[in-house]
Amino acid sequence: MALFADSAHLDDVAALRAVFPITGATTNPSILLAARERGQRATDREIARGLLDICPGPVFMQPSAASAEELRAAALRYVELEPSRVVVKLPLTSDGLEAAHALREDGARLSFTAVASVAQAYCALLAGAAWVIPYFGRLRRAGVDAPARLGAMARLIAAQHSDARLLVASLKSADEVTEALLAGGGDITAAPEIIRALAADPLTNTAVARFAADWERFQRPDSAP
Image (tube, rainbow, N blue to C red; front, side):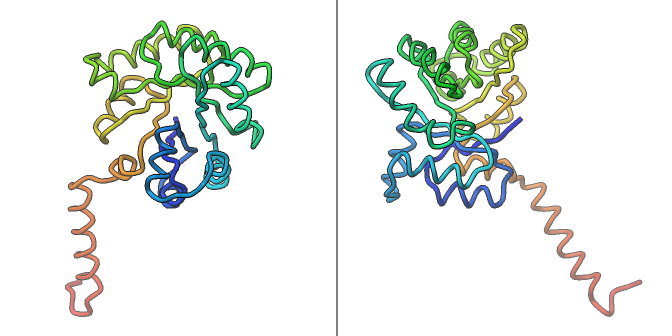
C-alpha cells in the first residue's frame, strides 16, 4: 500500500510530503506541461532529479517517442539518474511492449500506464511490469464500471501470483480514491488537492473544535473540579 503524488510541480510535492506519508511521485508529459504552465522552469530531467530528492521512494517518468527504440533511449535518460528508484512508465501498445523488452535487459524498473482492459493488464504482467496503472476516471467517463474493472485486474494479478502492483490513477475525488481502494487498488496516485481532501471530514472538524473549546475551559482557574 503506497500513496503517490501525481504532480511534477516540485514546490507542491515538497509541501505535500511535509504533511502526508507520500512514498513517491508520478508524472507524464501532460503533468510536466501543467507544471511549466504554472511557471516552473525546469527540464524533465531536472524535475525527475528534484522529485527523487524530495521523495523517499519511486519516481515515475514517462518517455514520449514515435518508436520503440526512441522510447527506450528516452527512458534511459531518466533511468540513469537513479536506476533503483526511477520507474519508467510505458504505454500499453506494441511499441511500449517492444521497448519494455529492451529496457528489462537494461535493468530498468517498468510500469505500464493507461491500462484499460484485463487483457492489457495480462500483457503488462508478461512484459515484467512492476506496476499496472489503470485510469479510474477515464474508465468511468468511457462508460466502464471502473471498480469492477479494477477488481478484475486485481484478481488477475493475484491469480498469476505476480509481485506486480495495481497503481490507480485519474482519481478526481476522495470518494473515488475510496472506491478504487475497496475495488482492489493496492497503490494510489492523485493530485495534491485530492490527497489533501483524504484527511478532511466535517465530523472530524466538529470533534476537534469541541476538544479545543473544552481544553480552554479546562485551563481556566475557576473551572469546576
